[in-house]
Length: 540
Image 1: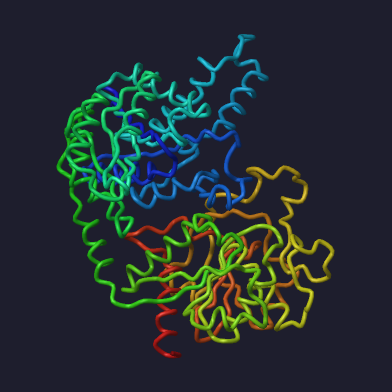
Image 2: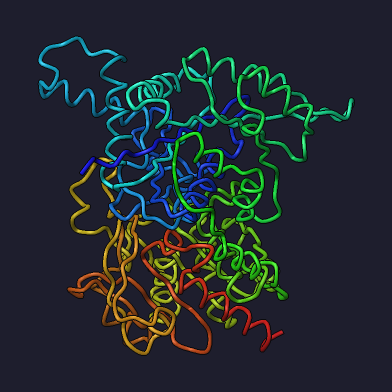
């Protein structure tokens, strides 16, 4: 039997960054999956950090974590949410990781004393990730997004690598999609094609001729612009496709399919597959359109100036709204602004309060006040990672009388460290890639809100943290009424806590937002939003 030929799609961007290459790649992945193809996605990032794990969320947005514990770019969250496939360590590669791997191989003698060069050693390392993703997933199609902008110095090795893949695999097995900005000039009331033309010429100068050009614009650019770009960029007229701003993110696949994107890609790659069946996706969009209620959720965090820092949390709340028939309005609350005197003014009109993950001591007291306000006022509360630790700290202060209860992360010499560094973390002095990362099981206590939400006795969730519930305080906190709703299978680690009562008040040490999907909301987010709606009905 002949070995299956994987097809490769490369998505590049030009003119400016932030054009939506990730959404284009993710939408195409969904369309091809709806044609019966197995799709795998990856992002190649040009920054020199080994991974985004040590980068500030205010610079880079959230760090997305895969099942196998890889810290990745936030675009991988879009990929998973759109194509509903779990990604792996080959799904994200940075310049830093490339050089790290190559230099380690050189130290180990893998190159037998050769001079190590950009070509072939760096480009071969990049190609190995592309090919390894194909083999590890047995995908029919691998979609690879190249981060940054064509013409950047940092992107050149990646562009050279994908040029080589096209040569090695043959043009029938590779498709290049270039996403470009078509700016609108209000003074003359017209869209301009020159930036797109120059960007394509830059790409062609790297030896890559795009098969498809995606025009990013706020409105229809007109056929004249499309024809001009087709002629001067040397692509077929039907291969110039608009990517317009849509009211709901998940409408993007339908918009692109109306331009026959998946048909064109299948034609370019000589793929023989059924038509695109978007029945399930359309049903989901119908549920979104049918929402008749609204609910207000406060996200109390320390990175709220950049909403992408909590991208998966935000999307998970929206997903829960899709299934509960509610438009979720998020109130972004800077944790440092919350104190006993401001909490009521800031949080009074919210139907639920969510405290997400984070690191460092900035804003911690504000989060504690938010958790206290939710508990004493009977508002639904959802704590994620740091938010779970905040719930424990607040409970210990209020119910055990430990006024100095804290995490040893914020008060290393405190008398009551109800949250403490994990034993296997104490000897580590490197910050990158050394946390508890990836998928771990959690056993759920019967009769809890957790059990009610999940409908299961054991679940698997993704983690990203160093500090844990301090077991020295298990007995005291349990006797004070705190429910240890989830633990590791061996009982050693507390994974979730609850405050019993009328309202949803749950904290989890893991990150459920990484597993939520637009057509399948995460059970905890669904339960949280549903309870926020009940609170709205009963208490307002």
